Amino acid sequence: MAKIETQYQTVTPAMAKEFLSRNHPNNRTISESLVRRYTDDIKNGRWVRTHQGLAFDVDEQLIDGQHRCAAIVAANKSVSVLITTGLPATSIEGIDLNRARRTADVLEIRSALPEGMSAQVTSARSAVLFRLMEPAKAQGSLSVREFDLVWAQYSESLKWASEKFTGGGHTGSLQRKIRSAPVVGAIIAAHKVSPAPIAAFVDRLDTGVGITRQDDPAASLRRHLDGVVSLHGEGRTGITYATLRACFAAIHNQHVSVYRTSVLTRGNPEFTKILRHFGFDSGSAE
Image 1 (cartoon, rainbow, N blue to C red):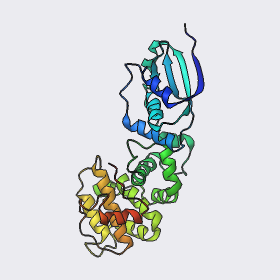
Image 2: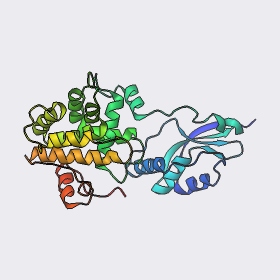
Image 3: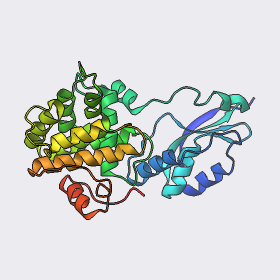
Image 4: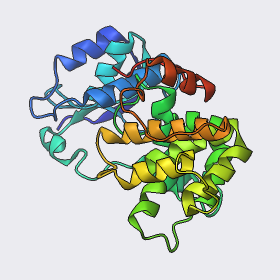
């Protein structure tokens, strides 16, 4: 029986490429979004050593760690990784059978959030913020290190939103949409820049009280959200952008009747001004 050995090694891009040439034929299809996330972490110095790494069976086939290897190659940078060798050929059948920990799970383990803040809700709102911050990198679910980047900039506004948007008693369709991550994430971004005007805007948006004009941005956003069929899929970004437009108008005492899809796109001169006001560049995610 082969001896199972585990040790940290510095894996170079050349080594990672060679390891991938020995990838087990039954390994899962590589997730490009996960490779991009790992690559970004490596390039930006956010890679951390853990008990997870690369694993090879007795036939020297790579049975775990293909995404890490692909990221090392893509980043063209060496990193320290825990490598296990000599595993039985059947070991691949027991790898990653259970659900991986989500960012929300890790936040709960860390006890990273103030009491009363939902890890799941905060993680979802933070994912919206990260997509605004880094549209070209925002692929798939939010990683813990990406959450940390968001928390460093938006912690106070995330806390404010946790207190402001409570879920109790709000069961109507419009109320659920107002409390959705695409909407609240945009409001958090605006709150960081202009807390008082956005707090007043949210009061009108949430209750409808205090709205005196149909082109009040709170009134028009309520109508816009009321007409939204789904908060999932590609439409989530449009909802976030419409909310940013409404927040910008509220801050500057502007009136908005409708939210034109043609305007609410990165690169559009009018919307570029809005993005920059809230601290985001206008680069495309494409």
